[in-house]
Amino acid sequence: MRDYYAQLHRLDTVAFRIRTANSADCKGWVTGHLGLLAATPRSLPRKYHSFSAEALGLRWARAAVISVVEGSPAAAAGIVKGDELMTFNNELVPVTGTSRWIGDFQLANGDRPVRIVLKREGEDRTVDVKPAIGCAIPVNLAISADANAFTDYSKIVIHSGILRIARTDDQLAVVVGHELAHVNMGHYGKKLQNAVLGALGGVLIDGGFALGTMNTGGTFTKYFYQVGARAFSPEFEREADYVGAYYATRAGYDLAGAEEIWAAMGMEDPNSIRKTTTHPTSPVRFLQMRKVAEEIADKKRRNQPLVPEMKRVEVDAAPATREEIN
Image (cartoon, rainbow, N blue to C red; front, side, top):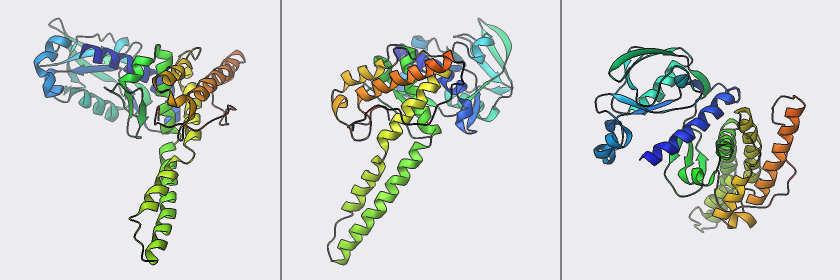
């Protein structure tokens, strides 16, 4: 449990910086972020109740801070790990569903100041926190050995396997930036549109066989739906890699060496080195990241704005097999 929350703190820190540095690209879907995580034993899954208080220093009667993002509004206001949260703007912080409640509070509160009453070492304190505006999409950590990440456009999910192979936060920032780029560029909607168009073609074929009294069981509809969903996927992935690199740089991360995440991915899944259908190969992504890093470094030297140029990065692409870093 301690290891999980240490990983979550690392991810929260990177996600906070990525979301706040790139809020202008989130097309109005923004909210205020405090940069803290709190819990009680009762706010965690039942199977953790018996030992979570001891493992994390939690109290049953009041939510305790278990993580504060460096450089966040909460940190600037002096909130520290172990502080017990009592109220946000006179609203009681619940002892069940605590982290979800804080997330909902931030979403509803926006950028308005938050007066937090807390208790530290038995003494009541009041602090005023000015939220930082950032992209509203949640970034969640899932326990999985798979080195993978994805978005369904309501959230971004990073598997713990990614944190294992991302040796630096710079490399992790490239992954989080990639997923945020997918959301902001509307890739999911475009893939869905391609899938529907493909399915319509399959319906016509299945219908033609039906007229000939042959029941295909919707085989062509299903097949062309899948083909449509894969249409342009390598291009979408390369765009997300490209824009995500800018997102990471804007958040203050260094791209020098960040391409090593793709070398690590190739070692995790050797098939991704040589063949794919939905993603560029790992070597292609490695080379593209180096090229984007050079482009961004050149813009910094020239004091040019760090704005992606929506062009194809000239690296020869080959097709990929698995849904790695979707």
